[in-house]
Length: 150
Picture (cartoon, rainbow, N blue to C red):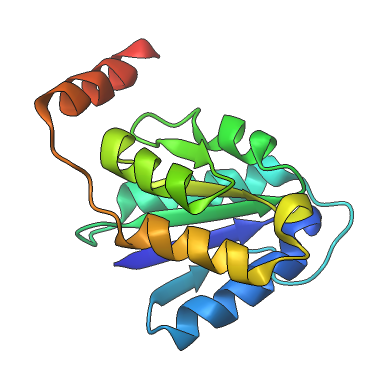
């Protein structure tokens, strides 16, 4: 599984910690920026980079992780792309549910929520990465309906 990760200035430090965590756990991770802290950067550019990489990847199960201050903006930007199912997640249960039911392929994390609890964000990321899509007919049907909306 290849993971593309991006963050604006609000999520920069948490992204750096997640890069270390993921690489230490032998995941293949591609940093889509920002590569340096730039307080004037804007989250849509990183959401666009990660979404494009997930959609164009030849990997069997490409995933993206996006981090900003609150996570909502990243999710809104990423979900503009047909085929992206970005989810804002705050705990391991939600991480498992969005993978199992929605086959989410982009995880959006709030740096504000997780900055003081790295073990919690690691548990969320692990739950999301290790939960397979259920392949249930009803879930496949609903995902198909999502792709037809816009």
